[in-house]
Image (cartoon, rainbow, N blue to C red; front, side):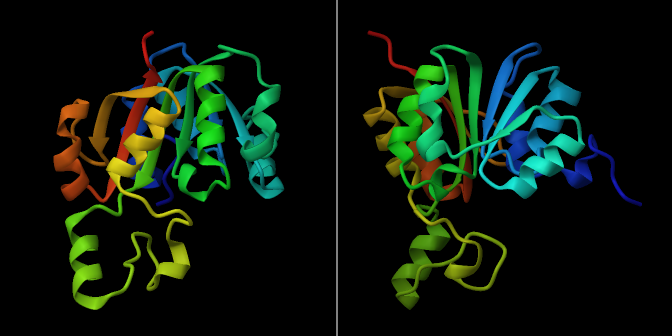
Amino acid sequence: MKSGPGSQGMRRADHVAIAQFINRGELVLDVGCGDGQLMDLLQSERGARTRGLEVEQAGVNRCVAKGLAVVQGNADADLPVYPDDAYDVAILSKTIQELARPKFVLDELSRVARRVIISFRNYGHWRVRTTLLTTGRIPNLGHGAGWWSDGARRPCTARDMAELAAEAGLQIVAATAVGGKPVNAKSLGRLNWTAEELVFVLERKKR
């Protein structure tokens, strides 16, 4: 049986992990929204209001066909047109490691939204470290056989991502392994060893 939009069978695990941090009625910008699966989930199950930004026309077309509000654009170049504090939350779900200018995008999203939520593959996982040590090869955290098939263009660890967030003036207010329970930033060292995929909730640092 084919699952509907709200069915567990159709959900990406990182989307489910992200959704727990979204409150009813919040205005959310999904950057790199693809075919709109996360937007659909946030609207139907979290009561959020969503907007999307997607670089591929095919993804935009699929979103529009679902009745989702999406514009075509490139996050690496087009975010400056968005006004300050226009959104409650901005999301990068497995998008930040594919960007040409990740710090620029985080800088812009921290201006555009009160919170920024990112999901990413963690190359600090113990299995990755062991594979690299024993084989001298970069393992793939995607679904393909090799690092070139479905890996991140910018592989990084949880500590690397935390450093990038700090450079962008953001602090980690919550984190979770995909499929795990939320923890605070003090557990980052453990997550860097044990989590293959992570979600960070970021906010502007208090001055």
